Length: 124
Image (tube, rainbow, N blue to C red):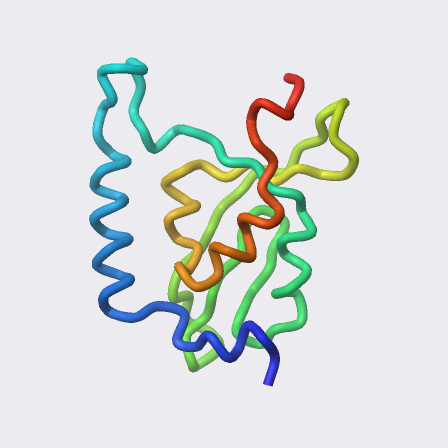
């Protein structure tokens, strides 16, 4: 059994409820920064996806990754992203909006955090 398959199902009922609450929070307007919270970007090295490329429980596309249910067809959740190059970062950077990052199953987030690039490290 592959490492990521050991985490199936991707989501528990409690995790789904927590993600729903987080999404509700992100959809609100933040008066302090004068923006909606969900449009904040989170950045990752594209290698974060390597773990999932050969998994029958994931579909990795050019601009998304879907974590699939036991039937290996139905998405349990999907994370959309934009791939971009930055002059000061080697390799392709995945830009994920906060509202999409919520769709990374909670047990997978520590893996993703290993590949996170802080916004302060990127030169726009």
